[in-house]
Length: 90
Image (cartoon, rainbow, N blue to C red; front, side):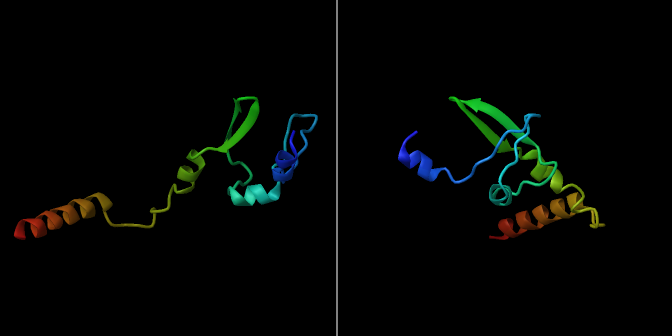
């Protein structure tokens, strides 16, 4: 390993006897990793790559519009109709 590679290595972690790895807090904050966040683990060119899965971001939005009583689909259709009318007038 070259000096430059060592110099850029800023985070260290140790694998436990159970194969568990603690991701340093700075990286957890940076990538918004919380307990239960699903990640994909892959072997890429001799390195282990850990990538947060986007499904967690999508699932986090579940129920965000549950308080909306308006029929969003009907509202969208009406807005598109009005938009077409405005365009036709031009």
